[in-house]
Length: 475
Image (cartoon, rainbow, N blue to C red; front, side, top):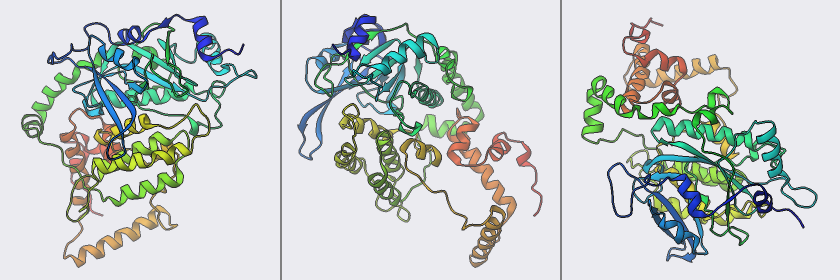
């Protein structure tokens, strides 16, 4: 008899029912009680995607608050619909990144597992017996969930991580690198790193006890203990390590520091609730990326293609009479994403990697996310679609800059203006300082990424009174 994924897991580990699994993830008293609305307490979210359609053709979706009583678990396991849950808690019933409050586990999806000549789970055996137990190059998960033809590795955290902006970014990078480490070519059947299925920390996963794509039920198995961020950091290079758990309570301290150092920012943003200034981007960018998806999306990158579409939609959602008179709306984004579902699913090669409405729902979260400023190289890597850099018409940089400066001077004279090199540099200084006012908890690296200034420029203008404040030399 052919050994299956469940067969191997059942032989080696105790099984957890859905309630045991989620009680381990969300210990008693951690989530708010039903209808309590306790300040400082939050709930999980269970999303149920039915096969029924709404009037506009989109699937009918239900969202349930996962409270301390775990009643939503019974609702999900007692139906035959596609149900997902994220290992996070939220403020309210919207599973958007800006409403996420604490991360309780890092979950990693592993598809395309190798099989032996009899169709057995060779990739799973290699993962556990070779890479985890023998070589110890992959951290031991707390639980493994069989999702049909693949598995989900759950690293449940001893202490939930508060999802401050910098913490969320670092957890994203840590998960991304752990995924790369786990998707080893002796475990999964891929031909290049570009086929690795990268997913963010906000990704939802099929729940234990609910239906799988092949008609069975997902099952969970206890494989280890809860882990710490320090433990997971030990399996990645320094550049990908997440922050230490002891730092997560620094938010109130740093906010008090911000009040003292940036009183104007504190008054506008914290006291008056004023939103940061944002640029309006033409919807042409959004339309361009839709065309790129249709012509360039490939298996292993489909989720990130739509996530990037949601990010561009957010950037193009602000009205500007001159630059963006016809902004993109969330309703338009949702319709476009569901219209792309058939195309995305048509790219499926194997039965263990279908693209469904759950993937779309997760990608749509990027519309509400603050993380909308990804470098071009990161988008290329995650979507598998090349984005050509700005051209210099075949010239070397000095020649290109010389020509650009000449054009700049001509245009300035036409407007009756005179370009001042000192003021030009001061504009960069103001960009850095404005970014710091809007992001008092931000780091130099984040400033560099979001403003696209060079590292030396950010360092130069980071602190008042630095070398950048000295009079500039004339050119």
